[in-house]
Length: 239
Image (cartoon, rainbow, N blue to C red; front, side, top):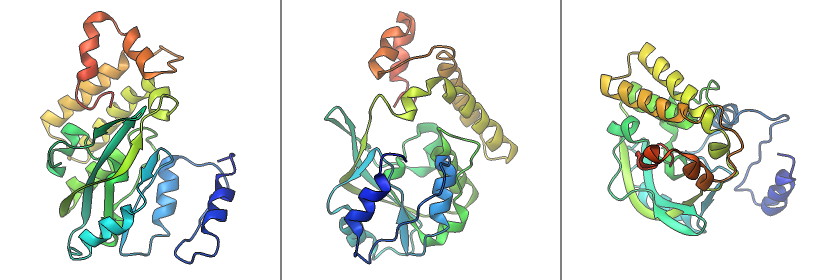
């Protein structure tokens, strides 16, 4: 980051021994940055908080109060809110199930807490820039016997804004879904139904290829042909 973020953080946590700061010397992809962070994890539990995510003041203590008695679990998923211009939408209306994660894309990384036991099993592939956390968690669940608990607490927020990488690279999602499909298929981790689902999502995003300069989510919807507008409701495609 070139906006003095590191200086701001250092000033905030200065003298507080609960915090350790690790900074990259040069800009890296999100996947490599997350793997770098994983290499420094030495606590009982760990989680990820991106620049467009917000924890409420007591998020950590609330979660720890629930999970300290469940140390045999590998992954904890909490609820939270999508913040779309101050319009809040719950992450989950019903309890999320990791078994059908690939068919729903309904795990928000900011709402997940991982046990240290799966640290070595979790890896973010640098081949992806948009669906790296989706691919990583799908692989984790499919390759290992992961135990999951759901906590119905609402103390994390994902800010949806038009300048995010998600919306600025709509035409890149098609390629990444096809790559994800190919890699999971190579490893024998993909069912026919899941293959069909990923190809369908790739096709929908391919419609945005060669369409540039989308500055707002609304512009994307307005520019879609009338018969395609219903696709904005396609579950998980456009958030």
